[in-house]
Length: 238
Image (cartoon, rainbow, N blue to C red):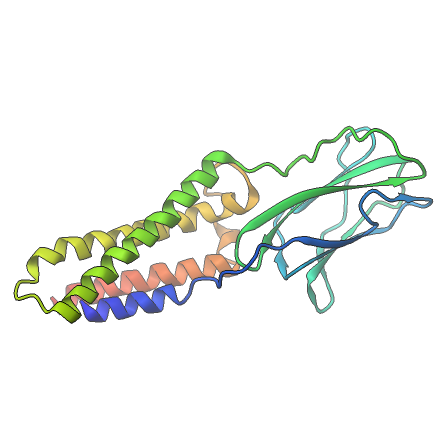
């Protein structure tokens, strides 16, 4: 039991460090500004490094039509700065930019800004794409808190055995197994829900491939592998 608890501590060590969510620090063009000429590139700088999604930036013209922009990427050597190429020709009026990125602490953040070319007009777009999917967010948070509860059960049972040394350990075994199974199931759920949680879309497994290429996805996969290895080891030792 102590060996399994030690492995569990190693698993938890793969979690992302807690920090404040990323916030938009500066933009070029600035939010609300009126430009005489259309910009060729949109640049956004955040308070910390951010990860990009498949659809992180949406730009809408004065008629609420989505523009075809270039591929967003990080500025050279700047994980906190993102550049989005804009079309060569842009009509006069106010443009709305909706953005959604992933903070260094693995939480997605979103927002919107506007800029105008030539003159300011009524913005027809209303921050599209910045709304969370309630179902996905709720399921993800349930799985996350279930993982915390499972950790408490497993570590609580292990610490009790280590320091109290009860003569009968059998009654604690169901508690330990329930916690271990809960952590295993919640980790798998977090891995499957990670992509939709980042994108703000309905639950689906189509983005699992992209999730496995991100740092949070790699950490969840490592945690799942370690838990499965611990389960197999426990069966062999038994």
